[in-house]
Amino acid sequence: QVQLVESGGGLVQPGGSLRLSCAASGRTFSSFAMAWFRQGPGREREFVAAITQSAGNTDYADSVKGRFTISRDNAKNTVYLQMNSLKPEDTALYYCAAATARGITPAPRWYNYWGQGTQVTVSS
Image 1 (cartoon, helix red, strand yellow):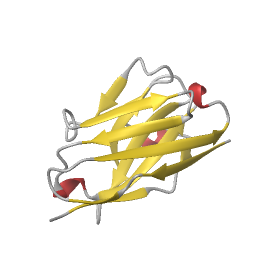
Image 2: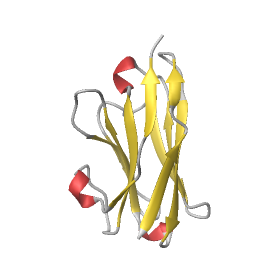
Image 3: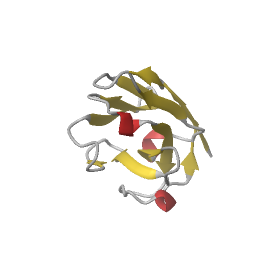
Image 4: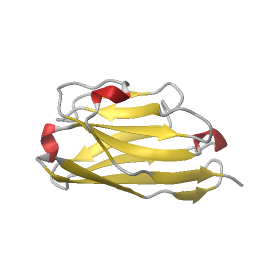
């Protein structure tokens, strides 16, 4: 088992930045591939970014490439999502997810554990 707790969400103006954090507890954090997903109002949950266990590989949704950066600190059991140049369409509940399998994928079913989410609102 692993417990995931997201933080860092909030209200930001268009063009602004936020950094989300996801703290993990329970099993060895370094054994999990990690990802961020989001779900906006009236929309399905969608993939944002993922990072492998060793941080050797990352993947991003086309909509956030060049603006968002996923990273992890295995010593702190934490994964981050740095979000720059935020747009109103980035408004969503952002979820952290963990997968026990090797590799990363945009598919939600790949991930075994989920946090409760942190709200990001981009508005002037």
